[in-house]
Length: 402
Image (cartoon, rainbow, N blue to C red):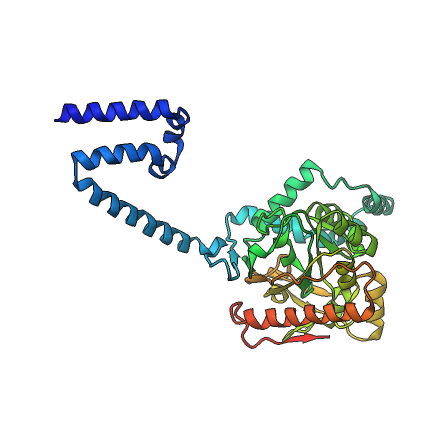
């Protein structure tokens, strides 16, 4: 009997290989050959049913066990991918970060956020320790670095940017929650309206294509012109995906299919920020809405919870400092983190991405049409904030729209 079973199995194996030669190599590579080769399995199964009637019961139990285990796997992976949902419901996704290597994370944070302090330290140390002519040489070198051309596609520069994104986001840690990830099209440019500005909008980087989380194409973070006149910082942040926040640059990026992250409140929002509530300087900010309409780029509300609390800060008040902030394109804020250093405190950041707001393309929208879409965006951002503030751990936090 055993000889007969081996003979039948051998014939069927030979027949299966001759019927489709590609199955011979795939059967060893596939993670589950029973499901990847249904015709071959059917021949084996029919023969086993004749020789071993119990095999039919075993096969049923195996299939039940397989699908149950697949369901368990999908549930355990919900925290770092697309959540299961029906076709008629949104498909939320959560992407979490964790501290991988304390040493790498420390250096990533120093490179990322310590550049400004490094420049100030270099200037002060040069003034105190070097002869005057050498101090002038240091200043001259910094001036040259302010205008030297930047290679956006530098191999080394992009490697540094990936290093920072890989280890920096796990420091806080930062978490990305997308309400409907299937609503995004990789071939479509989007305008992400990101709030709040805080001291630094450091949570915006989690939306970069270098992290691989968002199913969009190329993404740029629009930043103040002051960033691009700061030595070291301008090179580093360009490699990390930042671009000049001018109307011409903004429009050209969208027309080439590149999504843009905009912090609408900008410098003025940083001037009005408070310790006990969040501020979004949005009521008068309609330029990004108009550009989105002109280029048919859907608007996406984004809010970063916890970002305003990773630094302690103090800022001057009054009309003079407001005018000064507008003139120099950034708000003069004294801020400090861990051990009074530029390294922020380890406090969780939750970046929540809402659903895209679609509208008809309009190359010449009127102010009434722009105001209507602007109202939709403000309402969507406020609703996004209210839906997720408890999840982020700030159930009593208030958002003030200015």
